[in-house]
Length: 326
Image (cartoon, rainbow, N blue to C red; front, side, top):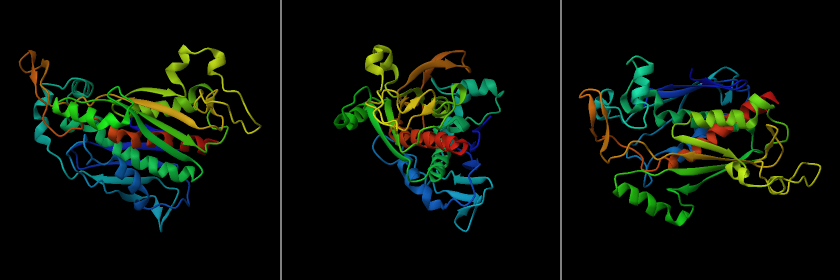
């Protein structure tokens, strides 16, 4: 299934080299001010163009085709479409017989009996995150101005020295390789009480969406895995006042699966882009042996550069769903 959510439900659709990609969002309350221009800031953050991103250029112009009338949501499902304008499907003709390492080429073909669209990864492509970013921008309208997002790339290629990020990416590009990174999203203004214990905890819902983002291989909240190396006295966040403000935030703003009023802090590990220009030895179904594969196409050297706003969008959608339940 390609639908997620309880009170706010999103369905992503389209393929990387198909006619369009888009999202249908159901559950947005009526009367929320909304225009296509409200999506532009976040869409621009995902757009390619900076060093280390794909040469594929798309306008990514959103078209809201339902659920909005005279500048406000109607309560009906909202559909947002994006036209794919710059595709080169010929770059992917050989991938049905010579699947790329660490891509969905082989598993998709097996799961769907060869009827999947292999061009650019089809529905498995990072191109589909464009629709998720649109959903995130609309989710932020539901959350309101009191909920504020602060998202940054804290690590690239194993280094947290931001002054070296450009150098690390360029070195990978020259080596016909790629690098990964870590994205941190801090959300302030979430009140105490959102989320449910166990299966619908803040972490559970947010992690579900974050792990749906292609290239995300790890998620942690607060001190995350570092908590395993701490004592209880080090990890605990003493409560300072009746509002629940704490001394420290190792919990990442969530205890018992419920927001505690402090900033929600989440980090997502983004793997290196799997499509690299360097030749790789991998199984070829046509020849029945391991052969060299040289991947054509236009790919990011560091997909983390454009993943920051996608991580933010996933958090916004999860929190908007929880707000509508509260």
